[in-house]
Length: 228
Image 1 (spheres, rainbow, N blue to C red):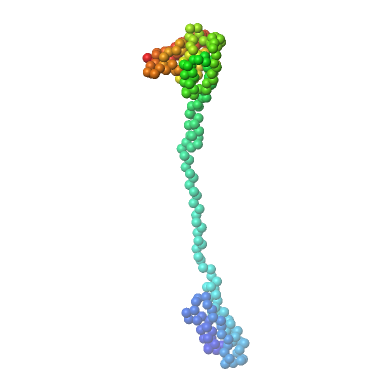
Image 2: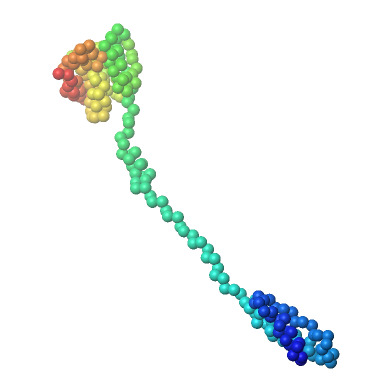
């Protein structure tokens, strides 16, 4: 092998300043080379060129260790803290509230010409009761049928939830009796006391009066006192 050919191969295989992965192709044998060495020289040149190029090819083929981009870590969303009490607390609060009872209807028996009776009807309606009026001239049969005690009568008689209400009894007393009930048959307010519901006077005076409770045996006992 000619030294000139070897120098050319080495020079052209890895040029000065060339990138590490750039491999120059081996040059063809010079035309001035003796023909008898042509085939052998070419073979030698190929072997030398491959030997020199192998390290560079290996460097190019070697994988570069690049750290894989780490996937973003999924962060679990914090669970919403349960509101103390929550819906259960609301339900318990609602259950604890006293239920508003619908007031039973009232049937009032009265004379067509009784103005104070009409005043009492308005008083009951303002208190939340639904009132139906039965006007008649003779109220005695009604009082007897409902069991109004003798000597305890007034100008009108009412029926409510199986109870008898005689006279100008305040609505608050009636609501109290409906709540307590017991074995009572009703309430009576004998006469027509000044200042009682339906019997109001311009100066606002309230005559002292006592509402009585009708017991199961027909007796009456004091239930509520009003006025001075």
